[in-house]
Image (cartoon, rainbow, N blue to C red; front, side):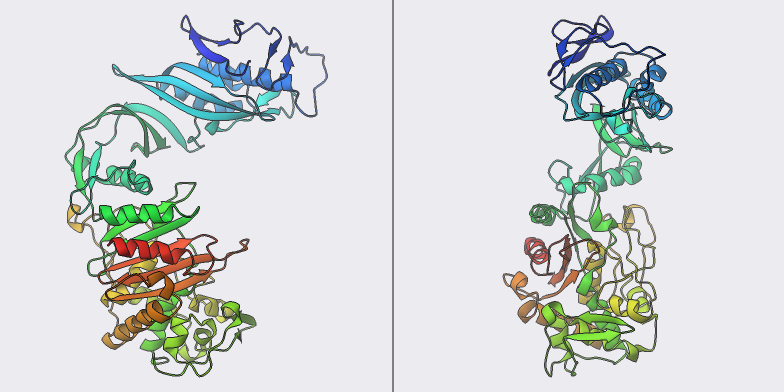
Length: 545
């Protein structure tokens, strides 16, 4: 198969066109591996081959599979050209009969070792509607374990890069109508302009498309097995009529969030309105497209000290002006904890320990709580975290602070160990601190479907809330968050965090803050100290709000 050769329709049948040589004629040619290939036959009496594949074997295996797949041959026969024909056959058959792909031209690129990239240009046709469709994928050739034959190493992603063992392609009338999602001011929100909202918009369509007043079109979609609702639209053959769906998002804040996370390879940010719980922005920059801002589960580092401080002050074990011992290190239940770069505070107060993020000051107060569930109860009862009952309008994780003892409890006090959060959780915690009471985050109004929102069993005591906000203000003006928050005016407060992760040389950077009636939190993977990377992300979002 020459570089640039094509698998194309010839008289209704697919064939390999390589310098005028059709499929079935194994004449000598310059193959996709760059090597020469010739006629090859294998008799039943030949020994099973072993060892590395030759360039000729890779060429011929790729050529045979691509031609058979595109050429309309029986799916079961084409599947025999892979190392897992039982799994491959239904996927190949569905590509033709469910995805309705026709008129394909497959162009292989030059192989890199045993890996062969290729592009597909095809037509998808259904119910009198058709549209061109193109994408790129790749296959890998391996030697069969029992036969020794060169075979395509089967994975659904060979057929399309987004296919998995639990998804399939379907072209049909859409299960639900499209939506025109708009922000709180009526500005349209699209995947093209706001890429981070892709999965969010898909979920909003799934949940509310039928009630938004639109009518379905015809589309090729990627669906999860057993689910009739499209998970992701890959190609629209005929547009339906979109119904308008109003969200709580703010287009300006969302745009700022999108731009801020793009500066880092792995970053997430979320913004919430403290007085209402309305989500104003959700953004991620991740290779896998995962909505980590709402579904992530990570240790939040010292941003968790907002909850810990509230608990300690409620129990009258600490107060901003009271002395708080902050040594370089402290041992608790056999585990040694230290402050960043081994700093200590001589004759300091609890507010200073909060503002400078002194780990040891918090851990030294654990025994005085006399309650292994104290932090868990504070998180649930006041901050609405860990109850597993948020109904934001799309899928979300509500955070988790399990009861813990010993060294694990000490780690929780400083946001490590078994504490699990995402940036929406932390933005909500900050919003609760700012507002004084928990408002469950929502991305669509409750009035849209009259769903029951989560509630906390009690508010922050007024005195505790006031002292907590004062310490966050101190952190934003003269503590570890001062640099990131320096350009912001108004009423502002913040908390930084650095979370160590097994296998990472550099800690994750966490930052959460408020400015007037806006709270935001961000995490940057391997970003270092909280104020270094995540801090500017939060500041950019707060500035836009």
